[in-house]
Structure formats: C-alpha cells, structure tokens
Image (cartoon, rainbow, N blue to C red; front, side):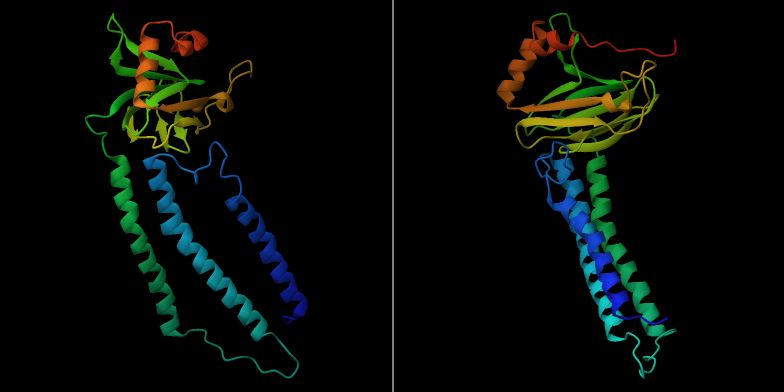
Length: 273
Ligand SMILES: [Cu+2]
C-alpha cells in the first residue's frame, strides 16, 4: 500500500490535532494561581528556566524541524505510478553515527545547567534566612517560626497560611507526622517531600508582594468521614513588605491576631497512638 494524498491529508490533520491543544494549554491563563510558568520566586524561576530554555525550547525546535522533514519526505517521495523506489540509505554508517552522537552531545550540554541547578537549589539556606519549620499532617500544614518567640519564649505558629517578607530568603525544614506529603507553591518553589522520620530542607523566596496558592503534591489519603483529604491540603503563602510582615508578627505574638483568631491555635494531630 503506498502513501497517497489521502494519507498525507490524514497525517496533517493528526499533527494539527496533537499540536493545537498543546499550544492552547501553553499560551493560555498566565493568571492561573498555580501556573508554574508565571513565577514570582527565584527557585521557581530557576526550575522554569531549566525546563523552558534548556529542555522544552530545544526539544520544540527539534520537533518542528523533524516533523517538517518527515512531512517533506512523505510528500516528496510518495508512491506514484511509474516511479522507482527512492535511493535507500538503510545501514549508512555515517548517518547512524551522526544521529547517535548528536543527541549524546545535546544531553551533555543539558547536563551542565541541570547539575548547576541541582547544587544551587539543594544548598543549605543562608545564615540570615528566615527560618520556618513546616510540619505536614493529614490534612494541614503547621508553620513554626523558631526565631520569632512570644514573651513566654514560645515560637510563633501558623496554620495553612505562611507569611513571609518579600525578597528575603526563607530556610524551610520539612517534616511529617503521619504519611508522605509534598510541599509545593508552584509560583515560588517546590516540590519537596515531607517524609515521616526525616527532616528535609529547602530554601525559597518571593520576589513580589502577593498571595500565592500552594498545595500538597503527594497523594496522602482521605479522612475516615471523607470530608477531608489530599485535595483539601492547601496552603497559602502571603509575601509582604518587611514592615507589613513585622506588623503581622507583632500582632500574632500578642495573641490577638486576625489569622490566629480565624484559624485557632494550630494543633498537631497525632495519628495511630
Ligand atoms: Cu498531603
């Protein structure tokens, strides 16, 4: 069976059907609260750039070039009455070596920014970072600021809403009291797992004042009544100016804070005891 114009037309339609939704998803909705392409923090920016500039970008160029070549060849050498078979290049050593070495070189090039990125994102938080101990549990987040204490020396606690000063590095330690969860604020940073019995650490910052939506990114179950579950394990990061942050801290430490009275004193739930 030869390739005729019906096949060519089907091929083009199939390519469009695949490409169009991808284009629509890629271009739309930059305002989405959890859009990893509309970043407002250095960690998320580095992760996005690594993906977009070093991987997706070259891959898109290669995809377009290869598809163009494929379509050209399919049309140019399609079977026609009286036409001989085109020259066969199967087993051409030079070509085989070339298309083995070229991707290997490409992978080697991508390795450099990837390793640099892994080292940078995996480093310890700097000494002047604001420390926050995050405890994940079914199905909420408890944020403890070990260096911000009240008159009795008790550290500031917050539930599901993490306030941070903008443009300041945040040093996070991450623990879980029950199952594996994952800390993810798409526009700022993530993901890092909270694993029972382990303390993981990460750093991140927000480079713009704003409220950022995040959530648990590791399926962690359903409550017995089914009212709560992985899908309700959301969090909010409020990045504010240094003055606003200090005012919030003072308000919280005095005990009459809006956030505290709204959510109540955060309680760590202990399971299975
Ligand atoms: Cu979870």
